[in-house]
Amino acid sequence: MATLLIELTNRCNLNCRHCFDQRHGGHDDIRLPVIEKIIGRAGEHDFDTIVFTGGEPTLHRQFPQIVRRVYEAGYRFGFVSNGQNFQKIYPQIKFFLDRLETITFSLDGVTPESHDSLRGDGTFTNLLKAISICVAKEIPFTFNSVLTAHNIHEIELLAGLAQQLGSGGVRFGQLMLTPAAMDHGLALTPDMINTVADKIEKLKESHTYPIGMGPGFYTALLFPCASLQMAELTITHSGHLALCCHLPDHGSALLHQDSQLDLNHVEFEEAFATWQGAVQSYRSTKKIYFNNRGKGFAEHLPCWFCQSYSNQVNWLKAYANTHWFRFIEENNFLGRPSND
Amino acid sequence: MIDHNQSFKTSPDVVVTELDGENESVLLHLGTKKYYTLNETGVRIWQLLGEGDTIGEVIRKICTEYEVSSASAEKSVSELIQSLLKEALLSQG
Ligand code: SF4
Ligand code: SF4
Image (tube, each protein chain N blue to C red):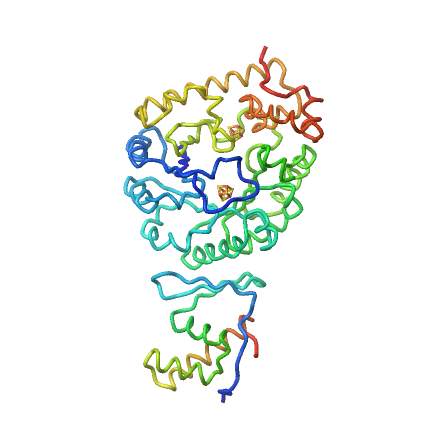
């Protein structure tokens, strides 16, 4: 069975320092006819779970109605949230929670000071209020922690706090390399990424509590994430089928066929078939590239490979004195790698 | 016998969350990471204690607002205070 990730909106009630450039400062919600199109047909293609993302998905003007429709159509569902709107939205969605898989809340620090310095004043307390409701009402929730240069020293504490607060697990992701991440001094260096990965592995070994590692860390696998395994399909707020939510452009540069992936204009079947073809083609290209020449460290950072392959790292030339630029230069891996 | 002139301090390490439409609140103690649920009367007693009311004042207000006997209010208030003190959600004022 597979998961649909639907970006309900690019609006957000926060303005986090580590958020993608201009990605979540918009004003657009996905249209309801697009949602209906997805709900109507996705089940026939083995999608049984729908996860809402954003921006902040609970801000979609019809969020409770969308949850109700997904529920009535028999899907399991979940959503990723910063928790700031949960106290308000809970009374409107509480009737549908027996099909809730989990709510994934963002936790980026173990103290108000640490969390709030990335996400804004009062956000830690509001998050605790959201999870207080979950605990009292036995609503399943987990945490996602984005590791940055600001909070990597808190990994062990974050795992401990997540467990103490009663979450079903914690997953550590790494901040994607963007100009904003560099400008704010939040980007992880290649060395930090390795150290962080070791720490997470040690935590996983020493805890029975579920601790996960998001995509992007060094791996020998060519297709390490659900998106590249084609077990997860992302749909953007504009109604386009996309590769993944980790890339600033959702991977549209990798899939190429924008208009044929647009659910405002084509039926789900057609868009899904186009998406499958496009992801297969990217997989083949990556395989050939690795057979021919993929050897370096950077190429084995899968999100970096996607970013680089879709020409999303050329901006690094403006950061010539950084670890990443030097590292990439040494590894001869800047810009789109060729597979010949 | 409880001292009706006694007042208390609610712990600053507690996050209080009201559940809209459900007449209850959840208290999370940040030190112990334990959660507690208070019903409507419990929330009101917590609020009054937090505002510095003495036990006697709390009992009087509970009697009036919930139309209960003074004996019943006294029992509810003192039982809740004992529990809150035990869990370090409250301290002697
Ligand atoms: S809550 Fe998420 S979407 Fe909103 S600004 Fe923060 S990182 Fe971006
Ligand atoms: S950026 Fe690429 S490797 Fe990373 S999660 Fe997305 S599809 Fe997978």
